[in-house]
Image (cartoon, rainbow, N blue to C red; front, side, top):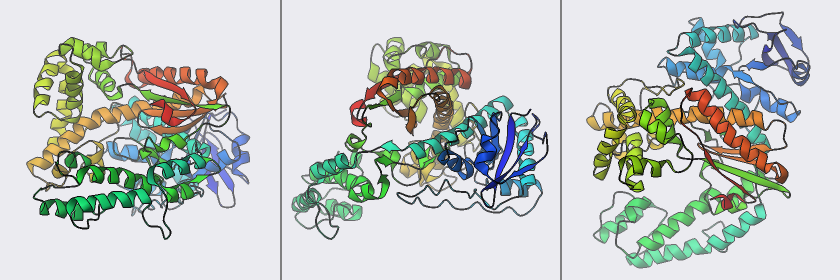
Length: 555
């Protein structure tokens, strides 16, 4: 009896399905059943469901109380394989993969629809990423993907990455359904405390209006602090040249307008991104349900479609409150990227430093920086992000002497990027051929370099910084997917629910009596993910874990 089934929905709520052999080919007849949910429920032996899109089928199963243990997402796999082949950005739908297989015109992917606040996620509907294809076409595409996995540089790693990405799709759908517990009354109280009264007609609240008046008074003329061009012009008239109104640049300016302007920018961001309108749009029945997009960035980090779930200000986190009798288990992976660098570079010295819980930078400083934790941190992050000017260059030299394989690993990745070559994460996710604005921002590339004309030295250096970071940040994303999969499995028999994930942070909402077991499960998932992702190394992947009633109390 097969434990792997290909499944697709059909019009009217039914399903077509067929058992698969290990070679990806049918191991029995194709069956058509009138009800998708019943078709899945009646086959408890299915250990892995193969389908074109988790987003297209799984929400319906979840709504009926059916939880799938494992899946293979054909469209997620196609994107990973295209990237490995240097074709990232080509249409990823099953229809596009089938067209390429038969040398037919390739249909474009459907554009992602904007999230609809408070409604069923548009990501999780019955539509796939492209036009429909026959059931037999899905079989062909899946079999061909098995062949393409075998042709990659490290087939076992690539298969593991595809399995992890597919597991991430399941987690994303489950977190969307569960939602983050959110107290609307607390949120409104916080907004009133920060912003003051709301004026009729949708104008700025009282505190913003007061700060805007202070900014204008400091310049001696009316200035709109929400218009960067107006602020830059006002400073120029005062004899101060600034290139932007970014916080770090304003903080260096000596002028009475700076303090109210910085305060205005902070509160304006809260008002526009998480103010009363956001609360009305996004919170329903005590839950905020972000629409997660696994692999939404080139490095594999997740994004969200609307709602700003990954940029919740700390003060607004006061509204994230566990249900009565429940707790939030908030866990942050400790110094994840330096530990990942140790694992992927196989540098003996850095692996020894990263083979312990606790403060990695403090241990590093004892080894190479005469006890200066700050210098150790700057050196290691400088190696990962390419920030090597000034004191960073001296610190990097000390790091290179003590941990040559680690520094050489990211140096080689940077050189590959500068030369226009592709680089890969440990499991095989591949960098794009060109660095876009989103990828540049993700990797911390200065915007001036990112805007440099193609082919210039600045452009090459920017790409080098991107690929330098990509191999570390992307490998950390590989680890995070497997950590989520392990945690999902460990908590399957509990009432606990994964409700939030961001890069290296996870939140589980659980009954208070389960909190200790959940915290232990998170720690175990981190170590298990380290062994599965990177193999047998001494590197540890510990978490700082807090059991709290409010998200804001965790940090």
